[in-house]
Image (tube, rainbow, N blue to C red):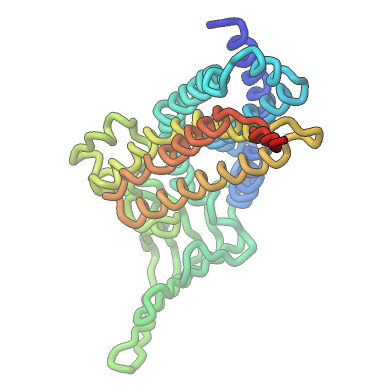
Length: 379
């Protein structure tokens, strides 16, 4: 690689490291605060919060890297222009196409980072997070069994516990299940225990009473049953009706491109949804070179100005917003109909065409228009 390319590439990589660190910190802190509030309110420890926030970091980095590449490219090009280095390179005969080569190499390097994240690290992190969420969901006591206050784990269910003994016994237990308007059930018990089974957590009520209020043909019937022991399935109160499906995003891209029956059964998704997730990962790395080239190409438009290149910066930001908007629209279309997954490649294609068009305009010769010499009057 020529020395001038190494110089430009080193400048872009340095700026990229700075912008990536700043953007990842801001984005990650924002995500971590909401996650912290949710987990702490569920009774989790600080170590669990730290683990979950660390598992969200790869996804945050994969989202931020293309934006950091755009910021580094735009800022680096602006600095080269303000210090007259860009003018000197152009005066030496380097065309915009030639100047774009190190920027393209820079974008490809960032794309490789994004590809490593979305195809390897992010699925592993999502899989680990899904496993940890399942483990936490099994710990019902830590999730919503808290003493001294009314709890509403799901809509239509009211739960109250007077106190929780040191050995885990729930004292003076009250549960009202009104999810079915035609059959409302109320359970009261002197004591209750949470028992973990292979089919999920079970609640064992001791020395209590069950009241069922049924609505039949417009008439209400109340039945009362007293019991010494009663088992109640509280798996639905943990936030899932039955067995939870595994997250489709936790599988590798190779398996998603060729989904088998076991994968589709475990996730509860269709073949088109699996293909849509795989092609979304394949299309995501292309955002990085497009963003880097947009930040560079737009700043080459126009001539030298003492007021800087703020107009070109605005156009670069607008172009990036357009590409991001197309990406969001494509994701919405694919979410509505997974068979439309080819649309995921449309935003990078449009961004690449914009870059080519802008570089073509920047490479056109510019200068004052020649005026025809005035004809001399005949003597």
